[in-house]
Length: 275
Image (cartoon, rainbow, N blue to C red; front, side, top):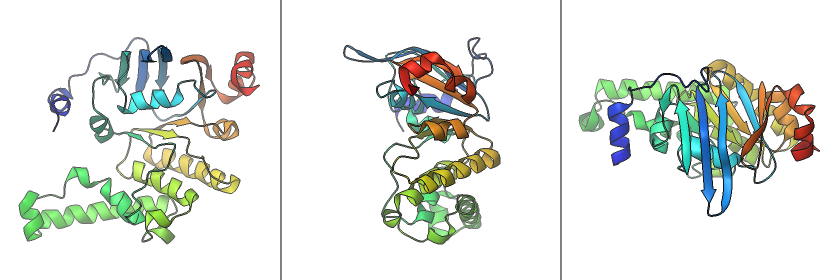
C-alpha cells in the first residue's frame, strides 16, 4: 500500500463541512487549474455534480473535458484547486482510493480485459473486497469464502442481466463487437455499486441503434443503482436526450450550465460549439 493510500485509510472519515460554493453537490471542483507548460487545460474551473442526476459535459476539442475526468478520477493531479467528494477534500487521494469509494470511470478507448470472459470481467471488479477468510479461506474452502463467492457471482449475474449481456457472459471480451464491449465496460463499472459514474465518450464507434440501446441501459443503471452519472460525449443529440443538465466547457472554463433546452438555445454555446 502506498503512503498516499495509507493516509487515505487513516483519515477517510474526517470530513470538513460542505463547501459553501457547492452546498448540494456530491462531487465538485473549486478553482481547478491544470497547466501543461504554457497551455492552460483547465482554468480555475468550478463545476458541481448533484446526487442522482445525469449531467453531460460537452465542448469543442481542447475544451478540457478529458482533463477534467482525469483529475476527478485521480489519474492526474491538478496544478491547483480543490476536488470535493461527499464533503471530503479528495484532491490528494489516489485513483484507487476514489474507485473503492464509489467514484468510477470508463475511458474513451475501450479497456476490457480481453483474455477474460464477460462474466470474469465483472467478477474481477469485485476482487478488491476479498474472498473472506484470508489464506486459510483459500486453502481450506471455508464457509465464509464460499458464501462470499456466491454473493459475488450473484451480483455479477444481476448486472449481466441488467445490461443485457446474458448471451455473451462466457464469451471472451476480446471477441465481442464494439457495441457489446462498451456495454461490458459499463457493467464492470457498476457491478460494485458506484456513487458517481464518469463515462468518457461511451458512444464512440457505435452505430445509431447501438447508441440508442446504450442510452436505455444508462437510464436503467441510473434508476436501479441510484448513482450520479457524468457524461463526456461529442454526440450532442445523445447528450440532449439523456441528460438532466449540461455543462459546456470552452478553453478550460464553464461557459454555460443548465437544462438541455436552455443549452440548445444559448447563443454563447452556439458560437463556441453548437454553431
